[in-house]
Image (cartoon, helix red, strand yellow):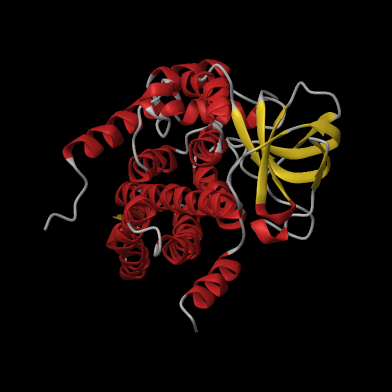
Length: 359
């Protein structure tokens, strides 16, 4: 049995990695961190032309019609390159519509989302770090919704919000609708902007699916964050190896010192075996859905912590230059912090995994 990615998936990963290395190198990332620009619209349009915006959208609605494992491979490549953009929230919006939208909703929204003409975003989190579907409190009355959401991806640039409401249901809200206002926050990872969403009897469209659809979307988010974390952790180890192999101290490169070797070896040994955890969780999402919730929780909890550890080791072994704003270590360290906290901390998902396992 072959446990590796298919030839097509390897090609997809290589293509996406080369694309972002060319179109969003570290010099461009520094411009994003230094500037006030919220979304690189040109980069988003080019990535949509590559097919990334409609990767999970069925072909009849203008998408590519691939599975979550394929999107996880893309997330891995984006984590490796610290790629900026709204793909995470956008992809989850298209997934929610695919799983729980009516035919009318799919026809209305999916073609424009698949082409990248419209940008989708998710508005799930509420006060008190309440991310989970059973924690949502917003209510809908006469197809209007009121309340606030936090940690919304690209709130000022998104055209369509997927909003979590009471009972684990989801609704679509247009940013241009009356009663909708957004706030931009200066988050730690400026490649993935976050902010707040305020709704005052804003018109909304309920998705037809029940709370099980919201749970599926949540699980997909955890898997994609885990894949992003694997790519970023892998890159952190590579950057550390490259730097310590070139930096000379006391007449020898840093990589000659045993204490440095041990730290790099420990980081690599923690990161590399976790690749299979991400791949299997993504595979299970489409082929073994009964296992997917627990595997998604484990993958998110484990990979995001490994990413934080690997990126901290990277910064430490780069020495003083690793702490500077102008150097590139910060992109992966801050992305690790984002992946760890977004959609809930590792402790939250370890507890969920234990409950799901019947412990």
